[in-house]
Length: 212
Image 1 (cartoon, rainbow, N blue to C red):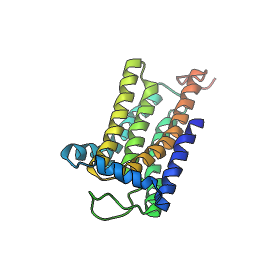
Image 2: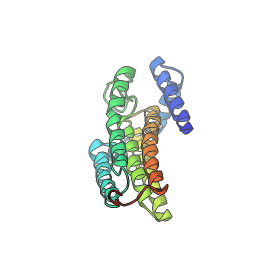
Image 3: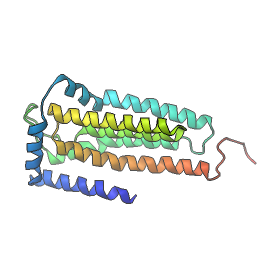
Image 4: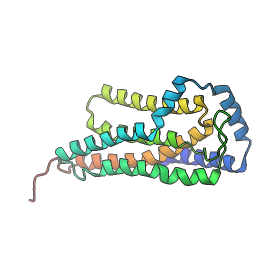
C-alpha cells in the first residue's frame, strides 16, 4: 500500500493548485492550447469515458466473475465483484463534491461553465476498465492473454483521456487528477481481489466440500 503515496500526494498537489489558482495552472493551460484540436476521432475517444459505455463493461465482468468464482467454490466468491462495484459507486460520490468545491472553469473549447475538476469521465474509465481487468486477471491462465488484457485496459483509459483533452472537454490536470483518484480506488479493489486469491491458494478449499 506504500504505492498509494505518490498518487495521493500528486492529487493533493494538483487540487491545491486548482483551488489557489497556482502557477501550475498556467502550464496546464498552455499545454491544453497546444493539444486541443476538436475532431470526430477525439469525440469518439472521449465517449469511452461515458457512463453508458464504460459501466456496462464493468457490469458484464462483475457478473461473469461472480459466476465463475461461485461455480469453482471459491471462499467469499462475492468479495471481488462487490469490491469492483463499490469502487464504481464511489466515483460520483467523490467526484461530485470535488467539482462543486473547486469550481474550475472549462477550456475555451466548451461553453462557459464550472465544475470541470476532476474529470468524471476519466475517473469512470479508470475505475470501470481497471476494476474489470483486476477481476479478470486471476481467472486467466495464459500470461499472453493477461498481457493483452492489461494492454487493452491501458489503451481504453489512455484513449478516453486523450480524447477528453484533445476535444477540449477537460484540462490535462483534470485528467491526471482523476488518474490519481482512480489509482487509489483500484488499489482497494486489488487488495480485496488478491486477498481472496491468497486465501484460496494458501489452503482454503477451492470447492465446497460440505461440513466436516
